[in-house]
Length: 112
Length: 112
DNA sequence: ATTATATTTAACTATATGGTTAAATATAAA
DNA sequence: TTTATATTTAACCATATAGTTAAATATAAT
Image (cartoon, rainbow over all chains, first blue to last red; front, side):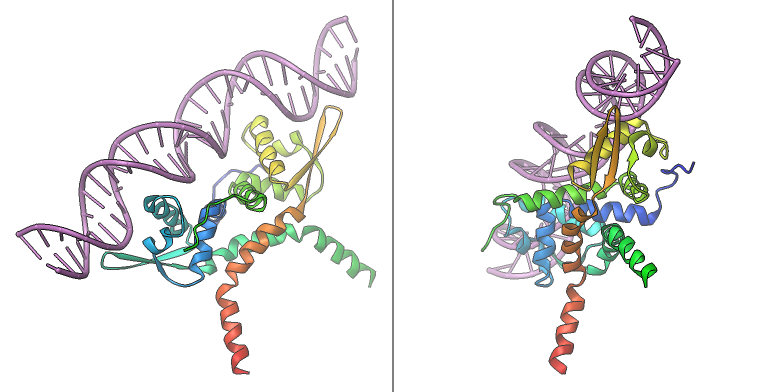
């Protein structure tokens, strides 16, 4: 019997952070806003009813997950999207979402 | 200026739950184990070092997110995968992961 | 040098999460 | 009917999360 929870690999820790970052609608909205390009913290915060400090914290969560990047110019912080970081999460989900479809495809191949 | 956080729609609440459910490596492992087919709580728990009660709670989180389904037969609960529930999360990520690639594709189309 | 702007950090609160052990519930077997 | 099995619920603990306001830091403008 193989048991798990041995070592949480770096890849697993990254998946944890990426999925957790996306589990909040405000953060997903931040990702959406950043498709318009690089933006300042206060520009982003203007779209929300919560405080700028709260938005700043959400951006840190996205940054720690590697989903957004920060460029600092003087007192101003510019945030931008790093979409490649979503690849691991996308691939993980795709495997299991497509699970039954893959099985059906395999059956089709056997019948050919 | 359009502000958000007006009403958390049912679709957003579902995405919140699905992403949050996937943000834990033990739960992702449960999903993986369930690709082998319907299994009992105690069968699943045997793969982990944590208690059966803890596994039972993780299964509830996956069930609340709609990722797994439960069939009760007497005292035994059989859990199975509901992969279609991952579609919304997959689609959400795909939009943003493909964001730059789509932009590049659009540029390619203009050059043709 | 003073003031205003951009943002983070600190301190705090409330609630959620992930785990535990003990007890309860439901069903099956002896 | 007594006992064993399968699982959940309850009560609890420690840590994490999401928000707040106030203070600190860094930089730019007057």
